[in-house]
Image (tube, rainbow, N blue to C red; front, side, top):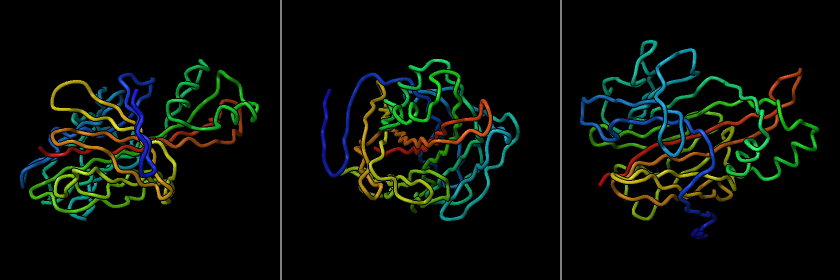
Length: 267
């Protein structure tokens, strides 16, 4: 285990990871020729590998693409796989945005909740759970996902911006046009404000070999610079966990909000 600290971020490299299920947009190609196609799969899984999800309007609140500053809805038909398969509307940086509907999860095993809380580093949550008089089994969590992906079309010029999601990761550099040899800067937001001291999990997928996982922390302004390498694809993940007041039996008592961002660094 190797730990390094600097510039308000802590990185922890490890070969195994506790059970967690991320949601992300997985492009077939992160760089697309002019007048090419934007093709990407929606996935749920672990360690940057997971099951493909179909295009189903009932399962999402928002599915958009912002290319060179112009926002369009992603077209599709029920059951389409991959969920994104459209002609690139114009050259520039395309930001794909997907917000799922709300889902629920019932915890019948206390240790699973403990593992989740500890892995995502939600300080004080277990004590708060006990202080609220909540049971260790049979309680419900509400959750939703807020995914973004960066795809370069043609010259790939442009920048990511805040897209109005309740929580999101904003890229503060363009990995296809900017020099990111010193790292890739991002900012984590919640309700439009900086998430300071938030854990960011980074999954790095090399051209060959196993996915590497590192943990990082944002500074007071919600910023952190992620280590990146040419030829790798990346998934950054940050999760909010907030309490809910149950109005009736079996109402959710916690809500998790999952932000993700995928991108690649060209060779």
